[in-house]
Image 1 (cartoon, helix red, strand yellow):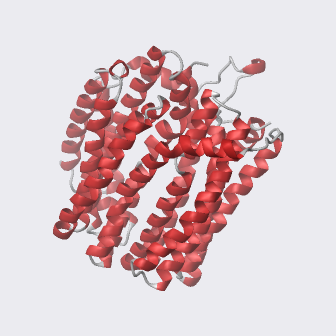
Image 2 (image 1 turned 90 degrees about the vertical axis):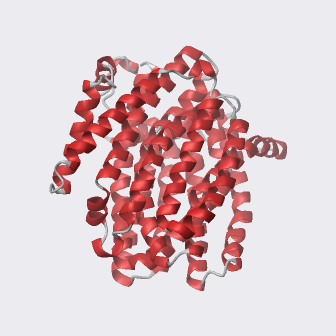
Image 3 (image 1 turned 45 degrees about the vertical axis):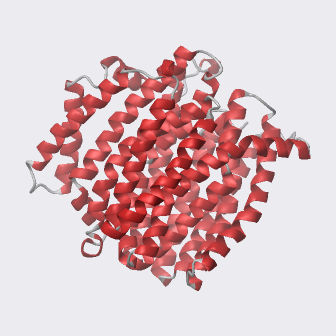
Length: 500
């Protein structure tokens, strides 16, 4: 199986699991918005922002480093796995109390402090699960982590919605995240019972060496998470609670749409890029070019939908009268999605090439400029200012990343694809705007159809690439033992076989 073919099939596996997770998670989000109202929904979103930052602190780039080490076979995989778990546990013991002290120092009420502490407990279990997931990611094995993630998200949604309906209590809702994180770890540990049990003895010098190697990666992810989450914190301090809820509603959609580059570049292609960085530059260039083309077309298409149909989307998903102002923030976040889609590929490529120090300079610059811009934008434009700042930050990142990439790995072909995708989006937007009276159920498929047809007419996608993508859905007769492996094979059976 070729590299691109295997990567495409892995994307299908992860995308299938992510679709289930997205439905469960977004159903949970909608229940939160309806039962809590804008003010309390914003409070929960702020607590989740703290949890996300805490997750990055205890990850500290260790998951990224572990996947790369396993992919490049630079050390014993079992040694790296156990050492990473030890380091993450130590970081959590330091970071969790620090998060609570920060909540106290900022004067948050008692309930918000409790929410942050409970979510910190869920972060500990997720850290264990993410470490095991990174181990399998480095081996380019995605079924078991996908099953565990589905179990986690579905559990959080079911337990959380029951808690919302029964109690309307934020503490009870956040406990759902703890239960779900424990389920995630349980599924992974159950699957790993088939794995070899020759666990190594970890020496202190090995722990120190691994931690020191992860410092640049950790600082990159901390700075990235800071500039992604600081706007929510600043908005909470500088605007009424309703504005925080409106921005949170738009930002949840932004986050949901960002799952595509996370799957393609962050999960599936990252170990591939790490492995290829040690070998053929021509093959590495092809993988980067094809992934950029795919994510350009995807990102422009999603941004088109958000810009043209923001109002009906918000009205459909949230209580229309309470959350209508979220639509303008969603429109301003849409361009940032396009830049974010491309940034994922460039960042994953640089990480695979061990160029995280260059990324460190970029992310620290963004972590300084983003809050400075928000200091001006939020008092003037509230949630719209925060959304605009997010998109401009992603544009800055894109320009800087393109300039940082090695010249032999950047192709002018991607500029052609981007230009044609923009033209196709413009034509689709005009077609949808001409039917303003159409409902969302009509306008959404119309926008997608017009965009796809125009992109094909402009040959933004080469026919051979479409045929290659469709061939992924066919059985692979070159698989081991002569039996074709079908993508639709029962996922639980595949998970068991994968870890044997």
